[in-house]
Structure formats: C-alpha cells, structure tokens
Length: 158
Image 1 (cartoon, rainbow, N blue to C red):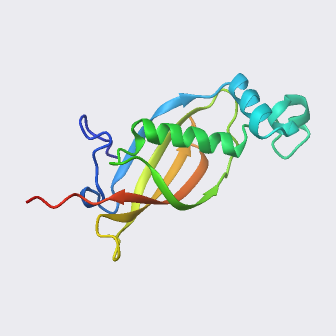
Image 2 (cartoon, helix red, strand yellow):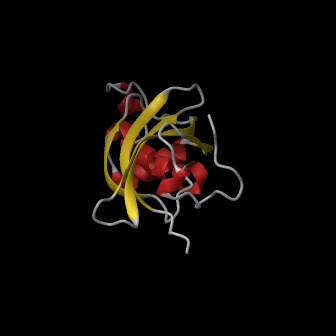
C-alpha cells in the first residue's frame, strides 16, 4: 500500500490519481468516554450509552454509533488519509458497518481509488469514486464507505 508523500497533503488533483491507487490514514484510539459523549449528543440509544443495556442486544456490549465511526473516518481521511486538492467534497455515498466499533479500538482507514470520471460539462472538475475501509487494530473492517468525491482538475499550464 502506498501512502501520501510529504508535500502531497492536500495537493492531489483528479488528474494525479490512478485507478487502484491506495492511501492509508493515521490512527485514532476510541475510548468509552468518546463513545458515550457522541451517543449522548447525536445517537442516544441504550446500546451506545450503557454497557449493561448493550449486553442484551445484538451488539452484546457497548458499541459506538455507526455515525461516530463515520465521523472518525472523515477525521482520519481529512488529516492525511486522502490528500486531495480542495478537500474531501462528497457527491454521494454508500455506507455499511459490518462490525461495531468498541471502546479500546484503534482505527485507521485504508482507501482505494475505484473510478475516475472527468466532468463533460464542467471541465475544471471530475468525480473520483473511492472505497474507504475503516479497520480496527485487529484488521477487522468496522465500516465500508464508497464515496463519489468531487475533485478539481489540474489547471492547464500556459
């Protein structure tokens, strides 16, 4: 797997990418306090708020909200996982959570460029389809995000 090189952060245009190109983010350690704080604010369901309640559910223990995992994925990608010019601008996505994120997990994101489509009507941009797998310290996939991202094209020199 390749990672972004120094100086590339935030510098890659659509034209700089290749199908199959891979990126790896840094890491983020998740603890119970983070899970509880996010759940209280944004997803106040028992299996995200109370370990005892969660034991009686399909999660069989405290689990982070999928939206918390999605927010952490975004943070990791923005902080260097996807070094795209103009930031990470979504035009649509599909998301799934095959396993829960748990207290003590250390997450990182592995991303791959699946498709590159220059716009026919807006020649200054295009769409990159990127699949990002968020994995824990054991290599288990806790989230799969396939996103269509709007990226600028490299300006013509002249």
